[in-house]
Length: 118
Image 1 (cartoon, rainbow, N blue to C red):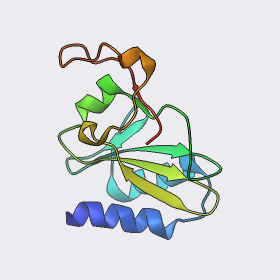
Image 2: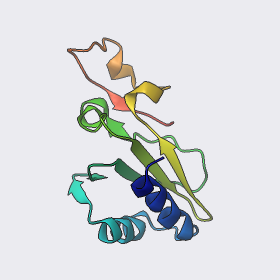
Image 3: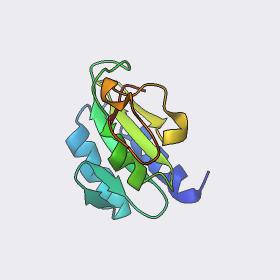
Image 4: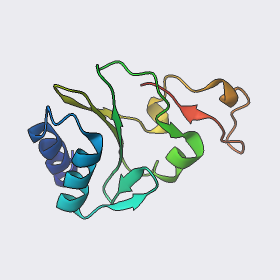
């Protein structure tokens, strides 16, 4: 694990129980001078997206596959913010387990659909 990624994960862990994804995103983005592209924060070392849920299980869409592909050359982290703890999950295309029904015709030249619950 790179030092930059280790520092990111430590800061997220220090904010367990924050229960506010927007606030955590501001803290992280300010601390590491991240660039924001719509809902994704990134730097040369990693990209991340903040989601929230009342529990560790969540069923919402995380990101479109075409958007995820833009960041697939570095670790892509989904930070799930819950009332008691923040969970970090790696979500690069290599690790996809579930994609939306609109991805049935998924091909290298036809990236459609959404990254669903991890």
